[in-house]
Amino acid sequence: MAVLPEKSILLVEDSALTRFATRRALEEKGYLVDEAASGQEALARAREKIRPYDLVILDIHLPGMDGLTVLDSLERLPEYRHVPVMVVTVESKVTTIKQAIELGAVEYLIKPFSEQELVRRVKKLLGTGARKEVSPLDLLRKVLRNEINRANRGGSKATLVLIVVEGVGRGKIIECAEQASRQLREIDTVMELGKNTIALVLPLTGRDGAQVVVNKLELAGVLQGVWTCGIAVYPDDGENGEELLARAEASLREKAKEKAPSEPS
Image (cartoon, rainbow, N blue to C red; front, side, top):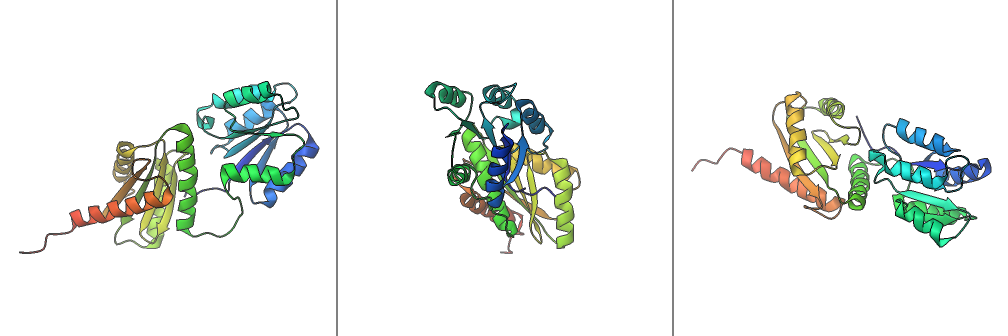
């Protein structure tokens, strides 16, 4: 079953000492950090990763392929078009920083920087990275926050689908969620939300696309028996995760009322 991984960061830095200190500071705050010592290695790691990194921290001055070239190459990868990039540089030349921003960087740090400042900037972009046990609903809220941020940066949509399947146990719901995750894209999130509820979070998808997904799951035999779905789309139905949850739940209630048999007169 596809669930939200810990927030992952690709750290691109040729100095082993700086990589060590930066990675330690970020991992202490609960982020997952992969390293690359060159631009070529960074692009290879980005292409190999099934789910894109949540953030790239990129030194501008790298041996061989420089950071600006790496940044431009990352922006040309469809899956990284809306992934935030923080550039790091030893110089504060306005032209260099301006060029990085024009190429897609959303944040920059001037060396030397403190670990506290680094963590503060990362937290501003990604939120907290602390690992802790969370409920399925809290996990869903994290997914929604991340995808709404991506949608907001890219001017796109993101859709939440809640599916309630009646008359099945929790084990069957987990199995349904696992089957659904195999039918959908790598960027989609499928999770078991309760003993009879599945949640789907679909990036770059509107209401019609979400309905196509639901129909696909039904045709594939993932949704069997009596089931109801509620759909909420960002930004049409809400500005944040809580509003999307409320709208999807309201949609579920409306669909359930439509399915309920009419009372005798």
